[in-house]
Image (cartoon, rainbow, N blue to C red; front, side, top):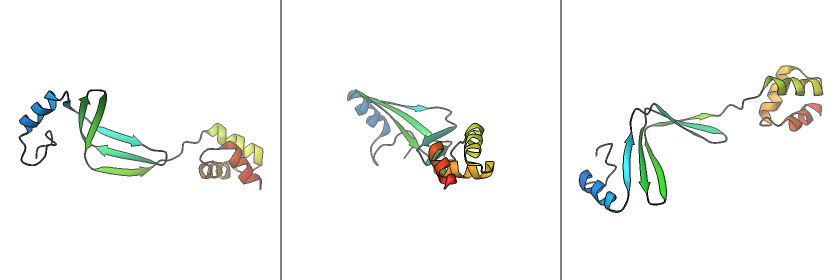
Length: 117
C-alpha cells in the first residue's frame, strides 16, 4: 500500500480518490513536513519526518498523521520571578522553591503553603 493511498487492500488508489471526490472529500499530502507535535497537559507526542494528509469533507477538516511517535514528558516551565517570590515568602532556598513549584504544577499559592508547613 502506498503512503498516499491509505486505501483498503485491493482497491485502486486512483479509483478510491475518484470516489472520494464524488462524495465531496478531497485529500492532499502536505509536503516537507519536518515534525508534528501533539501537546497534552503531561506529554508531548512527537512525530519526526511524519507523512501528513489534509482531508477536507463537507463541514469537516481533518489531518491524518503517519509516522513513529515518541512520547516525551512535558517539563513545566517555571519563571525565575515565581521561584524568587516563593523563596522570599517561605524563607526557603531557590532550589527548594523551584522543586515545590514543579510539584504543584506551577501553582504559587500551593507551593508557598507546601513549603510553609
